[in-house]
Image (cartoon, rainbow, N blue to C red; front, side, top):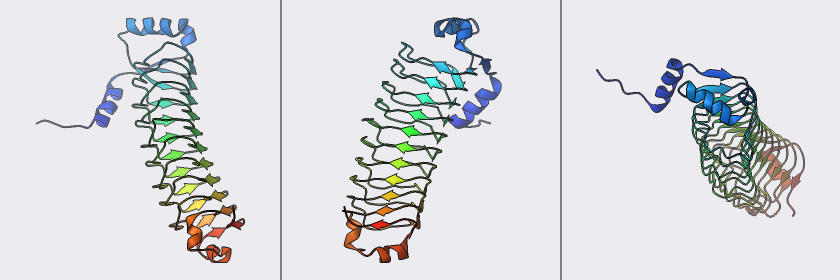
Length: 265
């Protein structure tokens, strides 16, 4: 009898059958090249770095069988082309000014994700970021893909992002001004402020609450949708929604606004 398994199930089985070699630091091996020689002598096993890994401005193109970095991973300004088998980064992941196109199998970043001015086209399998996500100035990334949860802030202003993908929860602030996003899609909760000023936004999607202020000025929004709570000010100056609701008093019957309702630019 044949059993058919998915790629994800295969990776889990692979992890269970192949022992991951835990290494303290590349410094212990005299640097990255020394580490690669050591791994080659052991037939290139899966391995993890228990500290941080600084490959900034290096010529490294692939991380090979590295599956996790417990600390921060610096790749900014490097020639990195592939993250290999990397699945988890406990600290920050810095990819600014790189030509990497996809995050591949990476699913978790415990700290900040700095993708500013990178050539990323896909976030791959990434689902959670504990800190901030910065895609400011990215030109090829069009969607946040499988990313569902961000513990800190999301800065996507002045980028070519068109979709928030599967993103549902942001613990901090969200900056989407000067973007091509037309809908907030699956986003339900923003813990801090949300600004989409002068963007192409037409729908708030599934958004229900914003902890701080909400900036919707100069947008094409015509309905509050599922929005129930705004902790700070609600700025609607120049928004299409004012064609339907001009009175702040009327707006407050639909949305619980903790601050001021502003209708002027």
